[in-house]
Image (tube, rainbow, N blue to C red; front, side, top):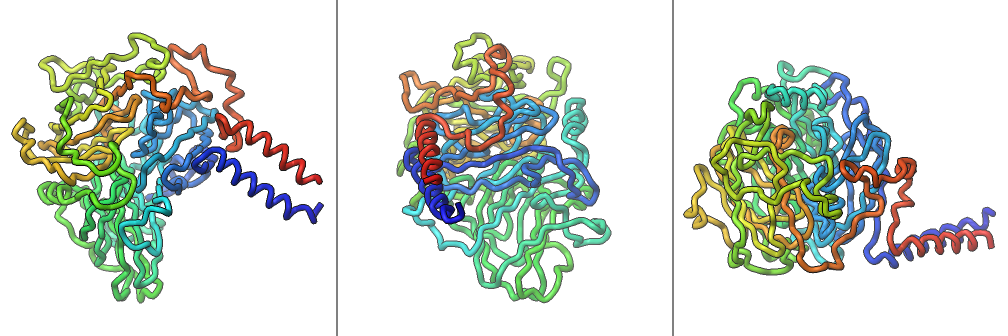
Length: 590
């Protein structure tokens, strides 16, 4: 028996190769158990959401066009969905993991996501999309590497480092969501976390003893790629590394014109890649800082995330004041945002329409000026609105209602501007034109920075300014190399304009990334329907969960609790899988 083991190993790897070959692009499988775990990010024990016991969760490290299969077991005490921030899910909004596309995974059940990272590269993240759960964790990174035939537009880094920055509260996510439902402002966070850890004790009067902090170990002279994600609740954060330049090279799937920054404002839901060269003399360690932006209260000045950059030849611990920054300078931040440009010459996957084109010459088919307001009473409840509508999630997801032609679940009547009427609760959806070119202007009438995200797409950020947007504002648009991304910031009393090509059929979530604004109703969906039969659009998954009006279609729950990644292989590869298993077993016993 022992002598047959090498043959068995060879057969197994051959089996994996053949499955991959039959399926076309490679598959990668993950099994996740999502549960509450105990952590002490700010020194005191509290309950957080972990994945396989990790907080933050594991990184999905894949390559362009790979198929990703994630089997999620929900061990929380409430329903769960994961959304994949910035992943476009080409013609497959069934995998988007938001309330408009998927029924939640009930507590104790599992569900398998299967999607392809089609024609994408770059830095993204995932997080739980329901019930304010992101405030408790459950997030992790997504890295999509270039295929080998497409070179990076910069030298290969010596290492790859993912950093999550976030505002953090010691109150549970359930307590926080109850507060905002009752009109209680979130207030100053209890701390800023870096990779789930609290601050280094840079000031004994501000940081108590015993807090575990993040240490990033590096080698002198080497260059590392730092992928930085703001996965927080509602706070814009400035990221900087003491005495080191940040060479911006990519944001949310687009290579950028390479520019050095001493610091970068990263707003809620945004992701950036920087190249950082270890070119200092390492007389001490160096501070890595994430600090709140656009707040002027003295209470906020005490809240900083601080990690340590440790050279292998460092001569001592970091000490002294943090690298300084003007805490409230929206003009500086807006000019910084405008300076971020798309690298139009880089050879990589590009936003659709694919390839080289001049987006500034494409005719706009639809214009939406979307205005938000601070929290207000709508039907007696504390709510937020877009164009006077506070989104009301139906019990039946929009995508399922569309699939089964169920009337009355939603209306394709989202207004293209603020209407002269009282605000209302409604399930109102944007009726997008398939292969149309949409212009969206976000007008922020709130007092804080808001950021907005569109699932299913990368859009071009073509303009932003203070004041009220008018038709004349188009003369200021960048019509050549505006960066393509999926999340953009809108400063208070200002506007941001984006252009998006609606070539991705499906129903796609348009939301505030600020969790409090989103939770209280600041979202809608864009319905993009191909009027012709499209054989390449992904069909309703066999493992769909049904809820709301369609609850009677739900299969036995027992079929949902078998937790195994092997069952994730689907479609035409099932028969190949079975035949190869039989052949493998037969070979091993010859």
